[in-house]
Length: 278
Image: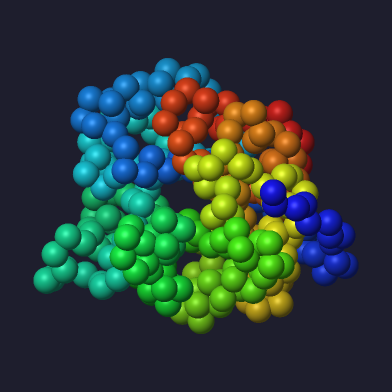
């Protein structure tokens, strides 16, 4: 059991949120390693036929790289596409198996994820360090891409009370690599690793407390304006059933959705922003 975090906002956090202005929530769908040639057409059709989306939502789909250009040709124009990762190296060259930021930009792909928890942990081999994630983030930004930079703690970190220690280390690597102006194209996805794909979701107070801590960290370590302008989205088993309660929290500016983005329920998550006044 993960205990709720009871925490009141500091005066600084209240001041930041009073100044914060977010034109739209960012609703991202991460399809992970899912989708065949035929099934992505079916998933695109569900979204294409869903009718008007909430005017308060900006929608981005991160699909496997092999499907990016095909999906770009069939998906409705108000959904942007994202890579799930980007090369550590810049440009073109002897980087077998990699896709560089330059390649993504050339293909008209506007976004990429960096630092997803599954890549940080690794797939049976050592995962990416925070420094690797930071360099990938900078490479993407330098090519004009927008970035959803993922951070988050393991269950043991949450239980030990070191959630922000872990998140701060991950953020610090990114901060040390970027210029302040770069943050205009960065969205932070807070992913409590213990809640990804497990069916366990951080309670709204838990998620809000960590989002507020992240925003306060940005204010103190980058700038108050970056803190006020950066969208911080939640990425731990968000579903159609819990998205409205989560989005109602003042520091939650959208979602990075995993399994629930593979079907029609994703439309309900996109449209939850229409139901919540912020």
